[in-house]
Length: 221
Ligand SMILES: O=C(O)CCC(=O)C(=O)O
Image (spheres, protein in one colour):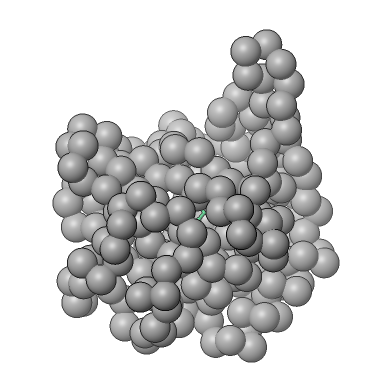
């Protein structure tokens, strides 16, 4: 596996797309290799598979928009989401409780493909729809107790390229920003979630959707 993080650290404060990272690659590139590993594969799915997956997701996923309480007010989260679990696990984060929904057939097949190609026994998937550049996800780690102590996540992207940013919890100089492409896979290996936070910032010039699937292994319900 090639270590090529410098190609992606154009600006760790990058919020929107960046043409330098647009090239496709059939080999994974290591993005982070300190206190956990992140690698990125731009061509996990072919363009036609990616187009089909985006269309099916937009049409068939039962999207909902959650509300969170901020300073006593109920505020809609800036994205739509849906939670699926083969082990019928509920998922709790940011004070929200997600009940699993029945998986559409295309999603059940996608889960088997991701399990087969990554070698991880993922049994659940959180799907997020960023309708345009005003949808986002704030700094967080996927470290909920239900994920166990060794959290590895496969994050698959279709639709508009958006930037994902990483920052180390303790080493302030360690930051990374990466535009993730249509059909790409980002692997986040343990113990990354213990040491790093990630976010998807807003990008005001984007008017088209992106869907992210984060495949997880729920250890208990
Ligand atoms: O949309 C993304 O790339 C990140 C999603 C994410 O961080 C999450 O689902 O916890």
